[in-house]
Image (tube, rainbow, N blue to C red; front, side):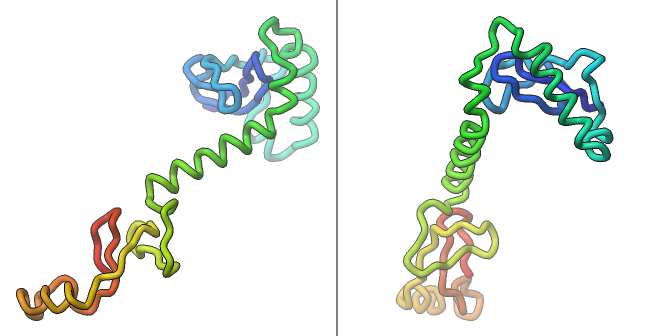
Length: 153
């Protein structure tokens, strides 16, 4: 079951299965804390009564989180900026892993893995492959090669 939890360092709040083991997505501190019972709301409450949920979050922030000796007001004030930066970094990492960061001059994307680090299969390579393998050539009718998943399309 999801539990409403918070980070005592930056004030980030959210739902989690494992509070103590989870790392804060804003400040990377390990050990989210479960909100006290008087501040606990369920996922359904958030979906059906957003105003009450927001008031509850504000009470938790004012009455518990800001009083924590490790609370960092600067981190709290910059959490949206940090969240955007973390999201941008994650998108860059995914793009690098998928090969989308390298791009190509043709604007072509692999239909299988969606990477953009593709190369054109030369006419010489296609002719050689067709000459060696005949109609069973893997490059017959293909124009592009994906350097990420090694498929031809």
